[in-house]
Image (cartoon, rainbow, N blue to C red; front, side, top):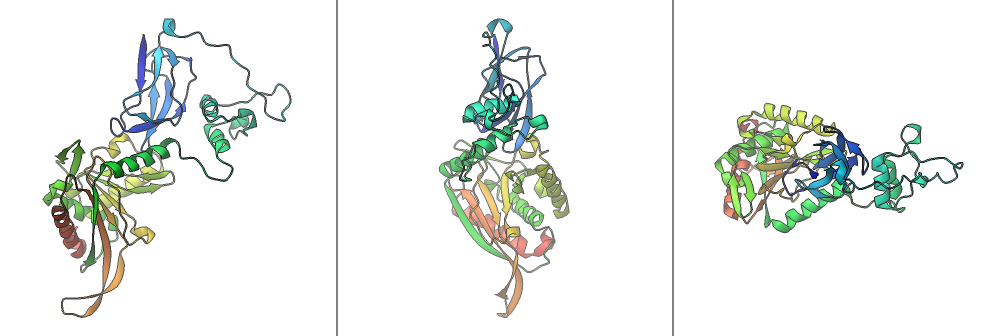
Length: 355
């Protein structure tokens, strides 16, 4: 009898995850609770333990996308396990004295086999020259410096392409000219105002379930956070019920945990809307991509002081920012989306008193 070990549902069933490391070899005997793999989906990592005693079989390749909820290996009872082939001695390193063996982790050996890398030509950077997965990956990169898109980066790229293919995306832009005081926490302020506006415009606050729109009971805003390993979007929960300062505190905590890779799957769950602020990079406007199953995302540009005409016709300097709302036209028409953007602009133009 075989027991399947599944890729856990970290973000959403059916979306891809990857095995980033196998902690056991094919044919290894394990006990229930033994850690056998590390997996990752959308920057969220989890350890996988053996659900039963037995022999590990059918390990999927490292960095090969596997739908969440689908098998990554099997645990066989001893009677079902195939007879393991005789062990083959590791090849000596090139130029090394005869009899020298390559010391490599099981994951590194498997990755080397998948990528066609000769371990004897890889310089190990681990203890006592142990070859790691990173060493194998570096050795497999093309000589012209162009690295292949693999693993989690490939999963993210495919998800973005699928979003573009499945979404009838439309982007509306407007400019908010802030009359009132501008708070120091720009992103938190925008999230607060957007959450309040979404309470009055629930058709943008929710998720798609096939051809059906499921309105969110509360406003949970996913916020783009840049890390050294890429972009993540943890969630500020119940954003409409929080003050600007509370949202700012939440954002700081999420950013710290994102950069230390300590976010959990619950930090990404139940998002009903997204905000991406590139103003800190000096970007004035951009077209954000909807992150399914959500149906809308707000892009925030740089806050700049620009000369504008006031109601009396005089030229005055005001803080101004461009807002870009991308939404799925299959679920939301242009006029309702424009009404949300207009209300958001009004809240922002009132300044920090709105937060």
